[in-house]
Length: 103
Length: 515
Image 1 (cartoon, chains in turn orange, cyan):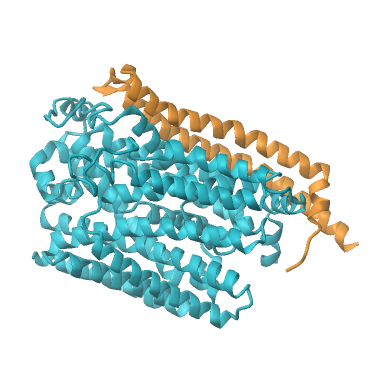
Image 2 (tube, helix red, strand yellow; image 1 turned 30 degrees about the vertical axis):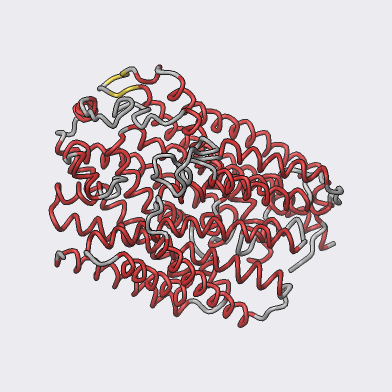
């Protein structure tokens, strides 16, 4: 396998921007879904507010649970879209790097 | 013994053996054996992840738990599914970009020390053993009930089957068995759901309305709302923590990301998996509610106290012997597919990490590697069958939640720090895994699972640690230990972190292999 000059890529401002962009996307959303998920057992264990019926005899607890399912699918789709732009940046970066290596 | 059951089982076994036969022809290198040659597409691997994940505990266990406990049974599904967001957002792509066959590969991409690799292998093997025992004990009980054969014979039969898949077909056969099984599981679930909806005249409101009327002296709350099991609040929170953070540390799920060619495919396999798994878990509501409405509580409990036979019994009620046989055969295939995946994961930790990298220091020929992998698979199979024979009376759900807890406490902190934290070092990795593993195990031994004054557990005395799942303590302990370990150790050069960062963000090393 080829040995790469990882330090050089890591120092590239474009790479730094990519990492920053990626983390700025990943971390807030991760914190959001972790909190949304953990809030659920807290609400069901310490309060009764989710036990009232919303519609069709279905209580808010079920609605919250189903919303978590919807959240998962939405965030998966969101990530799939966003990741394409990360891929594009990464590929451009590698292209420039390889061209420079060949010189 | 019912002839339709026997015929259905024989059909399923023949299909899977046929898959193994074709796979065995394509399994020549170590790479084929561990990762199916790394050539699965996104939807194939997504289906296989679903097949690997929707174990007997999900299908039989959750359907049964909803039938008996209503909302409290559904509670598990939430943690199980959201967990995939952590897999997708944080773990999947870096793992694919950094690793080759195992989780330890990924951590070793940053720390070359053999101790780190050995430590990661030990935690993987521990998790695999707990998970495996749960599946084998469940399989034994299921086969025993369906065929009326002794538990011992049942466990040995399942054990032999899984060993055949793994030894002859490796990851290729295991993956295809998992895919076929995932499709069959979905078909079975959709059929039962349809019949349950038919019973309620396709009116969701009627269905939920009828569930409000379910009463039992066992319930501490209402069937339809959270709290019917009357568990302490912290226990519920702790359980969700274990499920949410555990999945991203489960070695057999992580291993599935090495069966695809690049990070993009790894990502799309998670997408496929979340859709299939999510839809399945929503359908378990209908399975559980159907069983609660059409069967009596006594019927469900007398077949299995934990409710594990609710889905097959419901199938019998709705579709007679044929549907019951189909559902039971699917459950059987489920267990086989999951244990085969577990054997491969355990074997790779032994053969690739401990023997190949630590003992032989990577100086090992392709032929020797293959031999070591097969020998390790055989050993893992035999050891787990023997353990399962003694574990008959262990609670299956307890074993699975323990596996999740160890994965969340020992593996996940180290994975996250390896990818994101510049200052993280060798000491931190070793201390993190060790403390996460030990704290989880010790707290479980002191918990109501093992100590219970009513004599339902191993030791008849009041538990020292009150929660049945220790994740709420052990997960922060794992993160904290890895953090403190890092500061106690000497700081290491940033060069390795840069390499990990560049590789995980750009996939530079994996893209070179395919060029």
